[in-house]
Length: 423
Image (tube, rainbow, N blue to C red; front, side):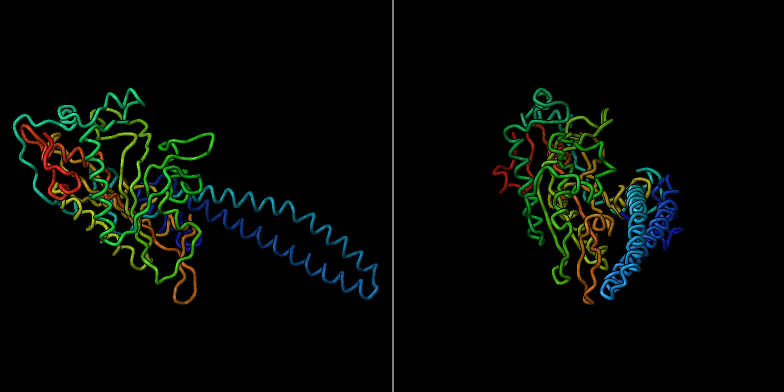
């Protein structure tokens, strides 16, 4: 979340940047400043009364030592009266702090100055396009038909076992998933990322820390009895590894990667764009997370974008990179790049990765800090990116590598898969 002090010092700038994100509740900025004024006033009043109580209590001891009991008794009554007045002020202070916090978490992160203006995906900025669209045989199939033809994925069986959006990977389809996961992890660790295998459920504090709560509460699956959330992305547990920690500057940057299944309700999703693997409720993903010195986070973001581009290039998949406009950005992001891969069987571009810089928005919630050379604690910047989300990658690999009688396997996966084609 944003820091109150920054909002106080830059209210007009905050409003201007929020307008780029198409944020409608701009009045929350003034509300936060007013609430913080009330909080400060109550805190001063509270502290002044505590100071009087401490001073008078000390004087009572001195008077008792001198035998001046009458004066001491008078001061005792005054102290009792001050303590009595302290309680309602303390309650009012706690209530004000609670309302301030509730208002603060409703304000999204400010977009970076690099974010283009715009209201919808149509306004996103094309950064670059790489690779050539495949030339497919006559009668090329979409991935859901290829999955049935080669017995790779059974969507009906998943619907029977669980429901729509929970595919069952079968035989070589399951092995293809496993090969991709291993390849992605090896590609990331070779670039200096430390691998983790985190829990697939998180508590409320973890979900709040990365900004899933309260913004995306309706998109997560919730385990009522244990008050736990199934993770929508490995970003949530992995970033929380360093919650409430103070790192040493020499240990930066922290680079982490993790494979997890991901669970998303995708409420309201329907139509042709959700067919097959295009949009599912459970899927596998390999994630990148970095914790970086504030002065180096945009350099790190560029490095992560380059890394994901190389990974897609190694699979020989045509892709394009989009810089998201203000109206299409996520709640917690300061700058986001989306990667889209061309799907030959559907003749459309599918999003397969988002790479984002959150600056201090997440680390302020989680209190992830580092001690600088002057011994002062500062908030780190957090970044994350998909490297990669498997459903649409697999969809594009099946479609783009199809021949009349087989599906070819990218060369970099031969050693992982053990075969060069699916027949």
